[in-house]
Amino acid sequence: MCASAKANFDAYYYLPEYYPTVEEAMGRLKNITPMLMGIWDGNLRSAEADRLGIRFFWNDGKATVIPFDKLSWMRIYQRTEYNGPCPWYVLAALSVEGEESPSVRAETRGTAESLYSIIATLAAAAGNPVEMRGLGFSFVDPTEKDLKGAGLKKQAGVTATIVEKGSPVEKGGLRKGDIILSVSGKAVESAEQYKKEVLPFTRTADTLEMEVLRKGKKQVFRVRPMPEEKFPAPPKSLTFGQSSVPGKEEKQPPKLGIVLRNLTMGEKGTLKGRTGTAILEVKPGGLAEAMKMQPGDIILFCNGKAVPSVEGFSALLVEGENTFHLLRNGKELTVGGSTVTESF
Image 1 (cartoon, rainbow, N blue to C red):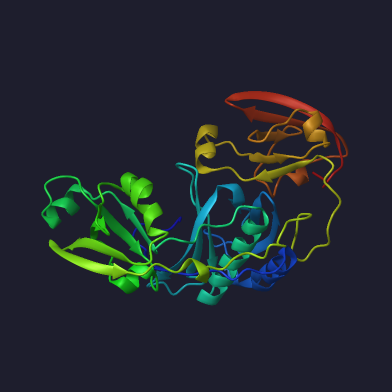
Image 2: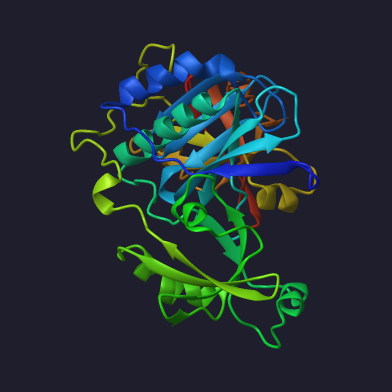
């Protein structure tokens, strides 16, 4: 989540409500469009979704992309001590190591919950339902300061860094900064060991006893995980058909045959100031496939002009022959083919 390091946030436990169809989810997104903002203050201009992910295009020229196959879980935050617009955030945690987690801001908690439900619905329709069986907290390995303050002489436990309001652990008594030493008799040795050995157990138990250290004193809390039958299940008929775009009629398949996304922070770093857009998908039978374009290619130039972003790409296309300068695995190459303006 891109925000000032000094900003304070509260996290909230939330279970989504699934919409019965992709069309209804996208219709709801259209309704809340005026109440959404990008991380850097841009208002939502348009959004589109397909089985690959959802893409938000902001009026400041930036875009937020949430790929469904990499979406592991989501969380709602409120930025406290902030009086500006849209202090609520929906953060989408990605499973890729080092990948920045995209966020979208919302005007109210209700709007944030609606957005959470919309994204969860679309991800489920794409065959990648969001994980929601957690206890409602995040954790890391204790720092040396944490260990010293707790009177521990060696590495042990995990430190709770975020405790969601209304979550099972918050109701049980866990607080931010607590060091979790064991769960129902199972010793917690590190964050990695917790994920591999303890976390799976917590998702099937009826009741957990959580032993923690708080300000050097041991305490034991009883945590009741959410029963599995209370977790919402997506409708079995929920599937993706054609790509959905709120406020627009369905278009014919694009002539060039590619789906684009904006660059990650890592990709931007490799370009050293240059701009571009990355190929998320190459559609079968399109011109991009014929030109041997590949997912992951970064389009640096179109017809000799620098590509500023996803939003700026179509304006560079011309009638007839188009030339694309790509970056692929550190090597640059040029390809070309015929297409139609505004149809990619």
